[in-house]
Image (cartoon, rainbow, N blue to C red; front, top):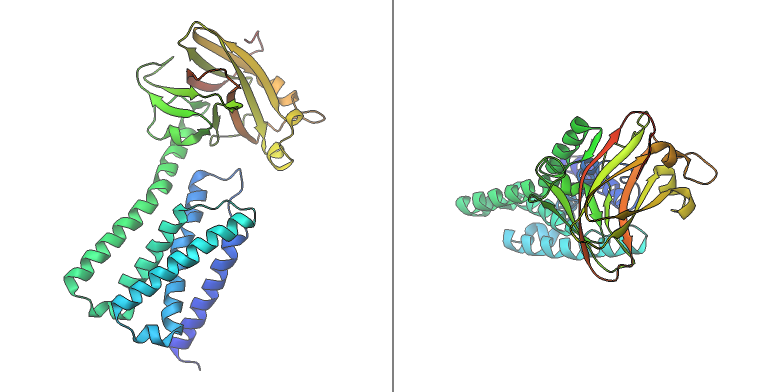
Length: 321
């Protein structure tokens, strides 16, 4: 029967190979939750902890070196390998995330200060300080998962309200080629709105990326936009489903409609029947809506607007603005 150390090394090697595969194959889909995506990113911590242990177990010189030498070599390898992985992921059509470099380092530090045998030769007080600092870094890497879980719970609780900017982490649901901040000086209802600092890019505006996507059974989606200026702004509303995401983002395969935003508050109500019928040659899947966007096209000068109270509504179809 092989010695326990050999079995341990074989087990580590198997885990290391699995980690390599998962770096380039699989991963979260467009419709997956933020919490799942952030949890998936934590795999870098486990992967680099395992690789650090394999490095010391299979390199006799390193195993015999002092703990300080081991730490220097492991961290240098961490940044060299981690940087190379991000570059290769970019070349393979995946999205490099340089935040992964920090997670890689946390994995190596966990291995160094909690698992490497020669950590016992480090002054006990100093070792405890490094261990506490490493655990602090680990907690920092867990913050995105915690924020996502809290906001996902709030989104499910508040549905059919998709965004009213009254809960702590709603800003994380949005992205876009524009400045986006929660504003507490102006609101259509409640205490806050989303300030949108539109720029002069071809397309400028916010995109709601994370929200409950089953809109079947609702009649409208409505939202309020405040224009502080006398000059109107034309905004386009774009809505699409998951099939649109995976079939090439064709213009005629989604809902697009423009609205002229006048001075003051403008309440926009969009019939979901129109959204459902918008794609050419098919019905939009109201059970799997994945995107809500507002954008201006080629503004001659930057403008500021405010968005509030994005919600689904029931009721009969009436006139919409």
